[in-house]
Image (cartoon, rainbow, N blue to C red; front, side, top):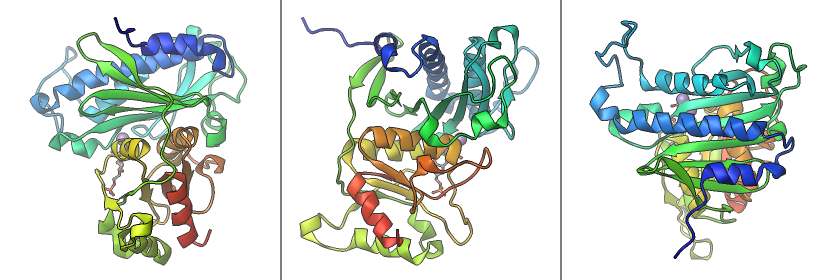
Length: 334
Ligand code: AHG
Ligand code: MN
Ligand code: MN
């Protein structure tokens, strides 16, 4: 008989010793994220039935109109992370400011989480994959006091764990604690995540490029030239590359992680820093990419070395297979 697959819960506990602060707390934190992502999965799977684009027309027990799915996902993650006394604060794409958890049970909380609870949400209405992205730091403010902005504005190289959940044709949770990248697929009938993609490695080369070419005319010349390079015919280097762009960052990233490729969202004349947010979109995916052997830059410097200045700071983003990112950077004068 074949060995049964290892579950995410078992994996987290078995690998606890690899965590920088092996107290079991980070295991509990990851378990909270695991639970939240199962609940979000449940909500997403019935999306077409509940009209989550606007008001659903259904009232909850307090007589309030049902929320849109980004708010629902945000709420689910807040509740799951607040429930255990591990996290002292949370920053999210859905909230202007970070929130502080300061109940009695949080008095010893050492961690903060930054998240994009539902990435690619505009794709929900057309039944296309969406994701959740998360980034975990150990707080720098003293334990026992309320979390501060400084806790959230740490550079990505201080992340102690990061990951994403992809609500695709199956739900997958992919994460790293700085010891490689592992992917788990949700077995829907059992409700357990099972290790399906151990030790994920991003191919050093690839032939997929993912960019919104609708913005082509707004891009800097270096980016335009790189796109032309991707489209040029050259059998030696397997060009032209294949263009693939879902418009859901997690899905585009995940495909390129498995198959090899580059995703980029550069600056444009109308968006001087691009669109994607450094702290809860780029940093966590950069950590995963690097741990899988890939690269993530803003076109000039390593994403994880950028000192964030604000919670919702945008940054140009080039992520993917090492040789492809290096090549792109050579076009940008780096
Ligand atoms: P969000 O839904 O969290 O606002 O993020 C959407 C992001 C990302 O998922 C995607 O890669 C990008 O926006 C697509 O943007 P364009 O439509 O401008 O290409
Ligand atoms: Mn997003
Ligand atoms: Mn979002």
